[in-house]
Image (cartoon, rainbow, N blue to C red):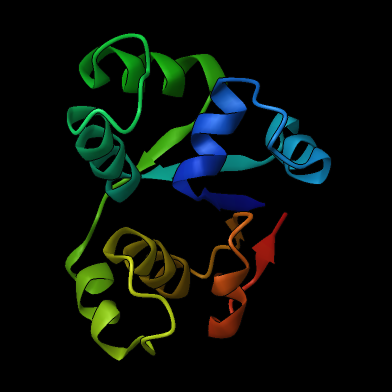
Length: 128
């Protein structure tokens, strides 16, 4: 199974944060699952770190690639199909990063691993 991770899921797993649900941890620890982190999440992390809202203990330039390697996650690029799919999404969720993740989940047909219950309004598979 291929899984798309929400930004907080990526951070919480890599930081061994107890806020990550037990079932999400089991999904992410399964070596048979392909785990994807969107470039939108990397962008969100860089913005929050730059604003001082997120302390990673190191620069994003080193944190993100190190965390991806350590946790065996892959980057999901943002394609034109992902970008244009945002237009058709209902406006239940206003966060632009979350809307991109939802568009990617829709276009690719991947379930999203997230604790954000607002994603449920879109009818995509959310695992938590």
